[in-house]
Image (cartoon, rainbow, N blue to C red):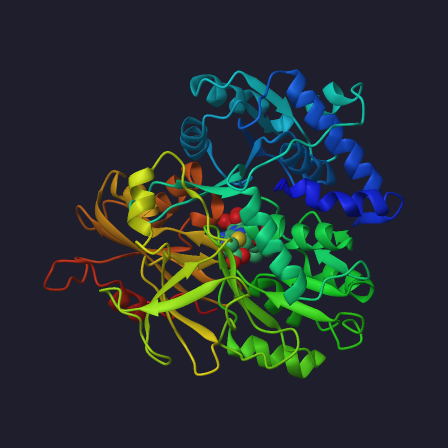
Length: 505
Ligand code: MCA
């Protein structure tokens, strides 16, 4: 069987050539035929300049229909798509390019000279530009090539994408996702959420993460649906475009910001059949406020970059607030104690997952891969939770102390290593603290070398210069010492409790 994800999207491209695939917020329409032609040109061009099957293509560009075409081109040519958050700064980019060893980098023309230096030092010779308006050397270079490309066959474990995620060490690890991982998960989601060609999705998520790229776009392309395409999330625009949409996907911040709009009413949501939330915990208050405003019970689901989607509240049937629903068909979720013993319903333990959705392994880290899988093939997610009598999963904690801010994962270790290196800092602990807009936001608790030697604004400024914005602490507080347990481990739960109201507005 050919597992190439694009080959499975292809029937829709063929049947719906003259139908709309997406409209931008300014009303520019792209047909299925347009994306097929653009992706064929990009695939042919990348091949012509010597990028070979299996090579990585690192992409740091603004969200645009052309960027979507580039992703599809990589699938078609068997190249490994490596998307990068636009917020990443020089050191972060150096790390990613050195680790991923791409054959080509694609960036916005505004960042070209900086990116070229980084690419050169990482030994990447091919660099092309792609701008938010679709212009750039990639588009210009591929303009004369034929708009036809024979999608290459892919086997089950052939890679489609490489996405990075950190962990306890603070060093991001490449997560290898295969064509089959993406295909099998998308099929499960299309069925679970009842996607069809009658659907129109409000697509406002970034497309450098699993949520906006694989979940949202995958469901649309596998079912022949269409999208209203926003370059970034804006609650006023969401209110403007929701009446024409049947599905919305977002992180909880999207829903809290919608509720803050007085003009968001049940009437605005009249054609929507389902609102889906993920990437961060949806507060019960948000769930109930949304229900009373619109009559809709937001459908919450659970996934992670390593596994795509694992569980989902049902489309028909009870959606239980505070839970992420039962395991998706084909996915096995179990709860274990620290010795690997399987726990009965109701007991809190480690969440483990097995299924065709689970990633192939960490890029160039076979030992780490082996460590994170059990002998019977379950992935240790690092999350803690329990399953109720009806099979609904609830997540109660994250073993790795990860912070989820506005749907973006922040790994404290990475920020702590950076802050600890700053002059005047003895040590630091980074925690997540409740935040009305982002759900949780980053706070750094710092022990200075000497009182008054370093200021909050200096630490924040240093972080801003080197780290992507979403990782920058919203506040820095100074203490004489960090609370530690008898094993001398920092008690982050104590810090979280102490500073839980720090960001109240
Ligand atoms: C922006 N800022 C943030 C965040 N985003 N700070 C913390 N957390 C964030 N997520 C900073 C900005 O740099 C700025 O800083 C200040 O906060 C205000 O920015 P604002 O303009 O209000 O932000 P925005 O442009 O409206 O963005 C917020 C957002 C966005 C819409 C929530 O972050 C977003 O689209 N998040 C979705 C992320 C996502 O797709 N997650 C899925 C991951 P300053 O004022 O200092 O300049 S996939 C995943 O997790 C798994 C697999 C899954 O299950 O889905």
